[in-house]
Length: 275
Image 1 (cartoon, rainbow, N blue to C red):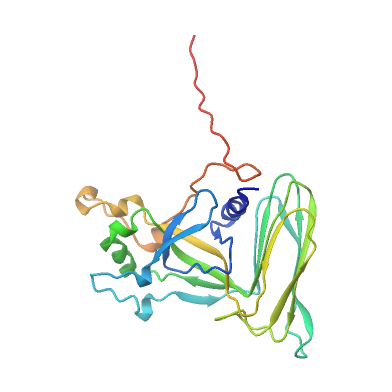
Image 2: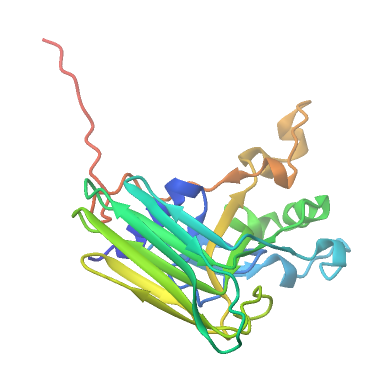
């Protein structure tokens, strides 16, 4: 299937307004800017706000401007239409070091009426762009660089992940994460535990990651300033518009409605003739 990644990304984006990273071991960082590849759905990196030089005296190393990282809950699960999480179990840390225990177990039911997707993240952490007006000033000062580009304002990283996209067949899909060693929140790597995914795959597309030294980034949010942000003050007249980061818009996909194979559906122009 030529557009497999695009189909999965589109299903996840529709469900959560966030974009899936088809290659979670590949870093996508807060402050990255670029575009979305229309054929694959993947983010095309062009640069990062924190490494872009500016001439207006904004110090992007200022602690108040650095990305904010917070710990999430035990797991984060995204599922598209046509998927039900029938069972979700989490387990506490094993009392005896070195004992293998099930850290997470999820069972999904896929209706089979159409392709559907699910994403499971273990020990997620949220990294977000601070809502500081100096960042909007930076973009405005280099409009020739940033205009028309999308900015990564949030990244969800995790210690282990599973991606699954079903076929058009009703099925039950179960996946469990086994951990050996102490289970601690992921900070700079995958934590101290050793993880292994176990699953039963029958018909769909399956991807996973559980390396203890990795920092996976399966999900991110893209935003863009409103079109009026780039207009000169004189072109806006007397109108006062709030262009703070909170008012930035979500990014729409650069493709039309996708069919079950991830290809764009044809849009037919209906011409009415009058007799």
